[in-house]
Length: 350
Image (cartoon, rainbow, N blue to C red):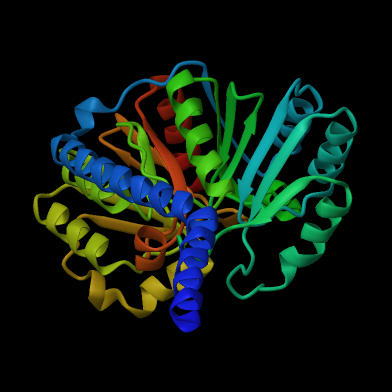
């Protein structure tokens, strides 16, 4: 009798404890999974329907490039003028002027949140020192979640929920001194809102599923959009890229070359040397012109310009990990003024 009573009480206690601590979380997570499945189906449908004609001109959007101290000071100035918040999601954050601007912003009670990559490729410990410095300044900083993506390779800053700064390069001293990197400063409401929502989810380690025709997100759907962009070319393709290792993209460029689409690629020294050593792999590209940047710069830009009409600027490399596994965030646009500037810069780097 006592044994039966004890067993009954144990079962009741177990279910009470379980329900108290886990039941609500269980159903919350179930709802999230169901919502994600629903969103994935919607995005899958939208991707099938996507075409370059849906790329739009972004409002209040400007283009800059490095090496340039002016770009660095523009970022510092915007942090100094922030009224409410500064949110950063980045692969590396070591630039001293940006760091001290963030420290000062925190002293003004600005809401600062940072998502930092824990283990950058070949530099696994580089961010640990800076993570502790930001943490000691009472800045709300977290490591990115390796369960959701292999590396957090994004480079974005959100100011006061109304402006986005996005870069092909990290927020490091070398970016502004030695690198050819590209920057977009945008107050386009739709784009800023989208990046804001993604940041919010990434910060609390939740998976993000969000779509916009002008948005390019890895590991969700960047490959599909890049392939559709390249496939749409009717006359020419211009590419800034440190190196080209993705076989699917290379095969796609070969197909475009067979149709006599002119393809121009500017690489860095490493990428160009690899190309020279493996020219046989590019043999089918009849209309391909590959060269290394003609200046003493580190070529770190990533951009694709199709028919001088549609521009894709992004943080990811043409490699399978970047396209399919890493967290990358970038945009598509067709702003003529920005495209004209990219064309001038591209020609000067040849």
